[in-house]
Image (cartoon, rainbow, N blue to C red; front, top):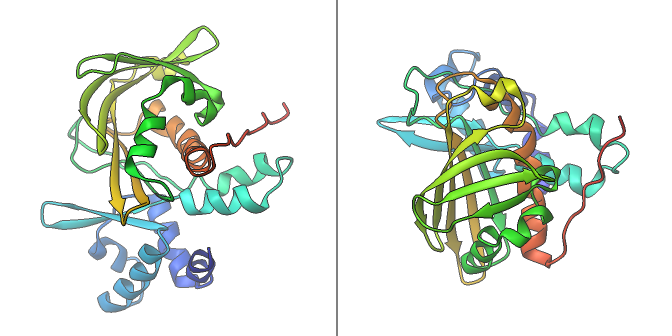
Length: 256
């Protein structure tokens, strides 16, 4: 975590994170115009943030877009913040802003998260595709029921209430899962069009992997695009703990 603290120690890099908080997915040129630095200077600072995994990049056409990755900050919170302080500190991990797009299924992602996990892709895949493991890492300890085939349904429940429904679009073990995502937990999200969630697993060496989660296709700023930013950082951090240790990281509900 030293690289995370070193990256955050510089005010210029914190400002770049603030710019991305205001509008995620910006290009180098867009970020440069908001600073008094040269293009090379901005590139140097972005490289430090990328090395610390606080900023992720994805190429769309000829442009490189930059995205906040709150997962490292969530891991810092998980390690040092007590469960009593967690509700107040949780906002630190919610650095994701919303990128409006005219194309309902834009190729520019809206939420991008990345984690390195000390486990093989097969071990991570086994947890992700085991419905009995879902409540051990999902936000609000949600359960799931899945028909594991392309075109099959994947549903999430809180108790007996279905809160998310989706359909599996792509299954490529142990590398990739793509599904539609239709939130049903409240009237404001239930009217939104289905979005898309992609899980990408990349092997690193013989006993580690990189997990990238992309949630896109909102069709602009919607109630769903705002709401999901609160759940993904927690769920991914809990997933990392479960896969690496075999022990569930239990998050106590905050007091009302």
